[in-house]
Image (cartoon, rainbow, N blue to C red; front, side, top):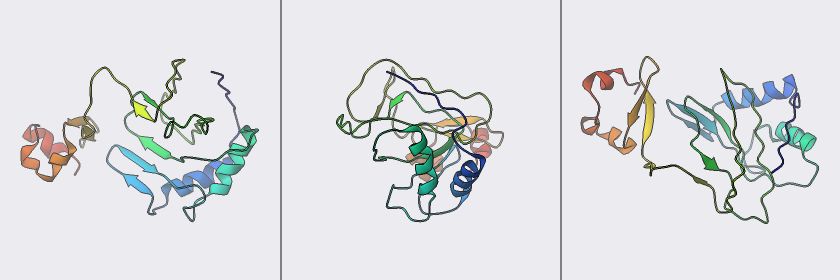
Length: 169
């Protein structure tokens, strides 16, 4: 698998435009205590700087392309090991492009040589419930909630009263 690294592709003006959009309140936001994301849909979502992103993509891609997913994302935790392969239609897959607009502290993306041709998925040594969620307390320490659905009934949470008092809810 060939990996191309491009440096200084995003201009300061483009970065500012994309970050301003990222910070703007709209209907494509997913905002939680540990993650904030926006997922505009290419050619469908209105009032997002698609033209700016297209300028950046056009500067690094030398073929016709169709954007499947656009994700503006920031998190207090990292992504679990996963595959960004859309629905797994290998005839349509081309590239995943990561454009860091800012980061705080060390950051990295690891790409493995292993091959996986199915639909997008996550990998791990054990099954992790899709309802497991980490929430920061008032000091910023992450507290694991085994089943986020239980937050509707706080009395059933398996945490101490002190941890409950410290949760940002």
